Length: 229
Image (tube, rainbow, N blue to C red; front, top):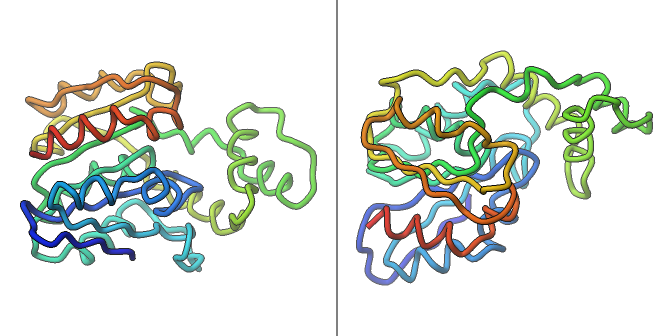
């Protein structure tokens, strides 16, 4: 885990959780998040999820519950704010029930579990030199897990574990102040507004761009800083 520390902290640490088939460096560090948060007086924690980045490949399919339990151990007893994007947001949804989370920012979150519809056999066959999957979603996942520097088998194992424990958001599961953000052209987070009534007082900030563009937008940083203050 990477840690960035300000000279004079002004609030609790901020835990940044990256998306699927990415890592903390790609989603957060290269896009300037630690610098912005440290300048605002916040310590920043940037882990890599199992099977991603510098984390070891899981030997068994990791469920959302097992991943969030590990994140809760990482947080310990110290209060934190959590910013999650895509898969990171899906995991962040479950953290307040397990750790002292003060505020949540959930970006690029799908209101349903996308991995249940993925043909893992077809995706892995493509990873080993087979033909591209005919199903568009499986094809997208197949290209994500075979991107340079990725471990297709480890990422497929993550998909297997996550779809055994699908995202089923329910009212009352999250009670901390929450900000949703989503790109106006992002198909992944389409329907995210359905989640707002489940968290009283939560708000949604639309961002310019698609799934990747919203993550990189300066508006995402500005909305997050304003909310965390």
